Image 1 (cartoon, helix red, strand yellow):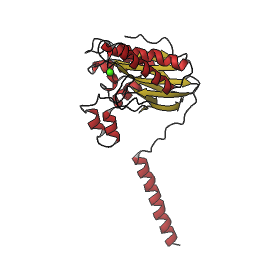
Image 2 (image 1 turned 180 degrees about the horizontal axis):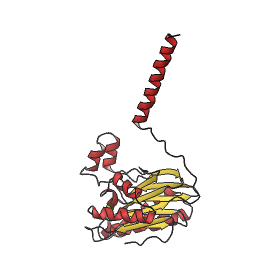
Image 3 (image 1 turned 180 degrees about the vertical axis):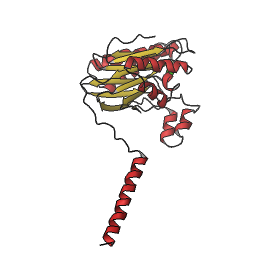
Image 4 (image 1 turned 90 degrees about the vertical axis):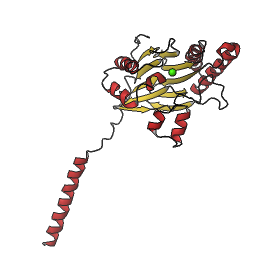
Length: 278
Ligand code: CA
């Protein structure tokens, strides 16, 4: 278990789960440079551990030397591929990765595979990354519903990760965003999202007063729900000076619309009556 971060902007917890002996997930939490990474390694003979560790080492080094975030992921990918060639017993090693890099009040997101990035804003949980998986492709093209996707037997077949040498090549997702007051970002490995769906995660975030409590509670809920895989959770909070965003538009309840409609209709009837009676 990784202890609570001493730094105030992020909190992270990781656990091997109840079924696996090793924890092949790796995290890099660097509040001072605004760089946060979760990587979920795969491959036998410790290949998964090695791949996720390379991602957590190489990406910060590359970004630190001024390389753009997507290129940093590509270089980490090449490094993992090289390692597989040097050590044939590690063949097949790879790692998914999600990366947040902050620059002032803006941040970039980059990812490969099915680890995820969510934004928590005004009580709404929004997935910001898009899984590189076969099921996600089928979902996008309308071949599957959300419910079918969730229980699909090929749910874990990813279409890209760092180190993967599939014919389809490396896919890297990218997004940009800006912090608003009160925003949290959630980074996680699929050990969390396989155990908890989005409404369950949102309910936990809603009742958590701070990121350390939320991170711990999310991890515990995933373990309580089976903990079939390694689970890693990282939460990052907006800088203290982030601007106040626009409050979300709230839809008026149906009863209010009905009452307004009745008042308008009554006004119209009275108006017509008054006009006819002149
Ligand atoms: Ca995993």
